[in-house]
Amino acid sequence: MASPYLLLEMSDEADCCFVAAWLFRTDQAQRLWLQALDEPEFADHVMLLHADGIPDIAAVALEIFGELERQHHFAVMNLHEDSFLGREFGLMERLGFFVHGRESYRMTLPKAITLAAVRPGGLGGGVNDRARGRP
Image (tube, rainbow, N blue to C red):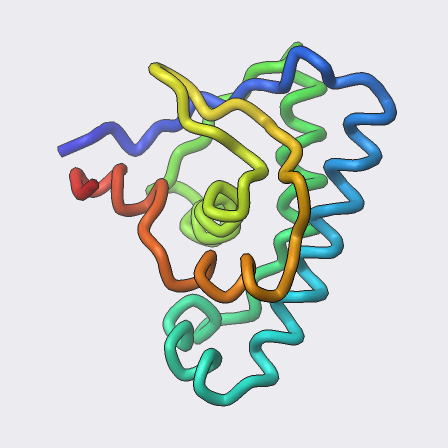
């Protein structure tokens, strides 16, 4: 079984412009996620992701950024301790806000966030599957 711990690291280019753009795009992703949930077929497919509350990508992004800043650009996340954080992180990874490297997930800025990108983000595999030992 894979480790439930994820090492997160801030981008090398994490200046104020990068951070502002990153947080702005997480807000875009949240708004598009809510828009996609208005579509009954999509909402049915991702029902388990929001059965206990609608994921809040923007709020978790701010929390992750704060932790990365507080911990000098590195942070550890335990998927078993906070499954809600893991849920949002998985969505963020699939949308391109983090890229998995050899040993960590590095903060990245997706080129664009669109409704077309958000829909498969809620359906695909990702960090939670890897933590359970699945590709």
